[in-house]
Image (cartoon, helix red, strand yellow):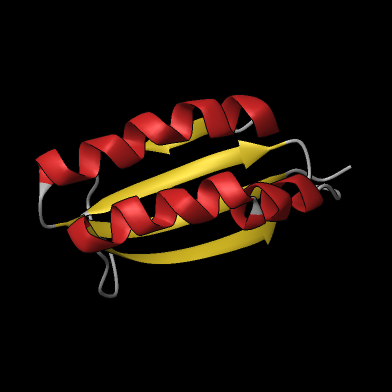
Length: 100
């Protein structure tokens, strides 16, 4: 079964105000099995226009990735994040087919 991923590109305007959002994600991700694949490390933009931070969170499947985002706990945590950041957020199903 293909995994599910949150792919988030964001700009944080207030790092101190953003910290409670990050801290709140720990329990939510434990509950839904979310695992960081990328977490705001160094990056180099090769094409297009992106935000300053990038995060990829992996879940066991697409349905779980959606359920985590839609959960009451995460919906509340969004209200913690929004005053301190702007995000482009997509949830995608991973590819589990043949490789070249």
